[in-house]
Length: 464
Length: 123
Image 1 (spheres, each protein chain N blue to C red):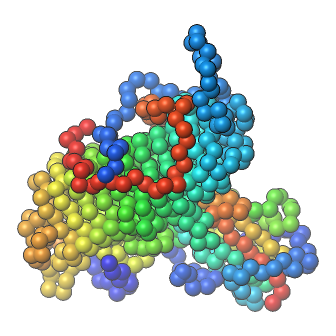
Image 2: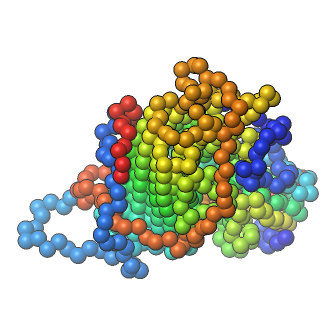
Image 3: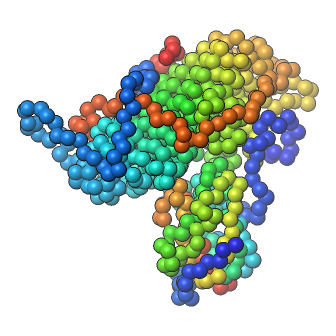
């Protein structure tokens, strides 16, 4: 993995130059500163949209069963609003290891979590609503280790739906996090955002309507994290992960109808560059290139319509994904220009089905003085595809040690500009599958790391 | 360029200077770079009247919000109507001696996450 000072590079970068930011300023000082949950991704459940509209938290009515229960499930749980009027009150009262159960209702809160090993669970994913009203920054901001957020909906916050973060300035990395059965939509930046955090799991969750990505895991090395069985649609980016490296697996998920599907990337604006060594396996990435979605700015449209775009990352494995009908390209490996130029090197694209895209496989690497292009260790093998740039990509960017240079630059036209939609105007999603036994399952803190994944056992998905 | 209006007195300078503080006293102006999601120098020590400029070089929107409540010691006017968009900047001059902790409401709290502090003392 190499970084090259930008000023030393003479290269056709115009297609991505708009991403180069940073005004010249004087800094105060140098600022060098075998998983068992392999269910097939589920599509959004049909039928009604269940969004509570009451201002104050509301409790469900008592069950109408004739036989009174002999025991109260989870008697030690802290209940909202029965025991505590607000989620924040319950969180503040909780001790490490506690379970907080939230009854259906709409909660206008921005919850700050600073206690380790809490499990914060809604009793109904589609009826426990954390509504930021486009006024509050984060539905949940979690600074403590081992916290799980389960079975609820969080929307319309100005920044993020659920935000797991270490105390970056103090060199504290968050250790352990989980989001399960969470629906995040129409938040101002990210849906579920894990930053400067390790040992995490995002699973069985859904995100839509975000001007950045619905799911983000970034600035971590090693990440030791898994994204499994999520659906991300109608966002600027389905998945984004800046400077996320080592032991991050994204599997068994659907990324569709976004501006871009999946974008592991390297940026100088975050620590731990460059990105590298993650695995993308068994996902459906389809029909990205949707302009009826929000975005932060035109910069976010670089690669608009890409399925899986690795921007300035190295050593990644992309295998057994179904990548179809994206408006720009299927799977792309590309250098990326920020303050430095970050190369895409030593990535492996293998055994994917990539069809129906204008260009199925793309590789953009540095040109050499002799006018040829070195694959830079990137290789393509065993993919089902029709078109590539450079052409015949699997005949020269091989994985068996016989790679050769090509004279084809392989840079397709990115197009644009593209239309956009304000995220506050995006529709609410349909109801999503709720967590089984939410009212009786014991709370399990997120302090044991992500599940073991048997990557070899994850098959190519057939279709939605 | 809003000027700080806090009433922090000279006695406040008895506050211990944290070990990681960067001493920039004597400089007429300094810049704090904002990255995602941190302030490049979390704690800076400056002289009264130093012009401090925060520049957002990240991709996220940030803000510089006083940790102290309105008009209490350490309070200062929030910058740029709460928002520092990418590539945006804002400037503030602290005339009074004292400690001014701040944070970004998007990525921190008064005591956790994206926090910073300006300590104003005589050279």
